[in-house]
Amino acid sequence: MLCVQQAQTKVHASPTARQRHFGGRRAGAASSQPMLAPWQVSLAMRTMGRDLAGPISISEVASLCRLSLCYFVRAFTNTVGVAPYAWFVQQRIMCAQRLLADTALPLVQVALECGFSDQAHFTKAFSKAAGMTPARWRRQICAS
Image (cartoon, rainbow, N blue to C red):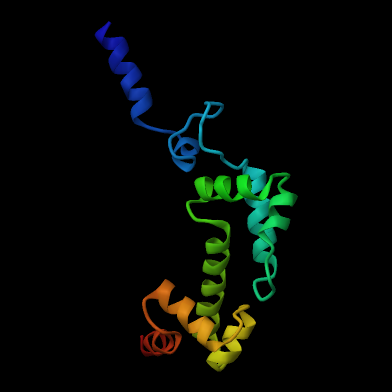
């Protein structure tokens, strides 16, 4: 009996990649927290990442995933670990970091290229995400 319990413990001690990805839940297990299917995650990320400079409608993304807005936001957050709009802003920040590192565009142009309404909005969002202003971030990248 002890060997059977030890064997069962070993099986559960090492979660599969799917279990790690979905927070330790087994496939098909009933859960009180909604999760997105892999095709929905892929579709949502592709749709939101398609045009970072343009406005995003989370309700349209939810509709493409065949879910209500509220359910989609909860499921996306549970699956990805961050809310859909926060994920979208992260993608804009990553785009801005690439432009800051690879081009000599002025900050206002980087802000507009990445979908921020103006340089002040860009600086505030970038500082919150990166811990420093875009200009300082660029200087540090260029110095190294």
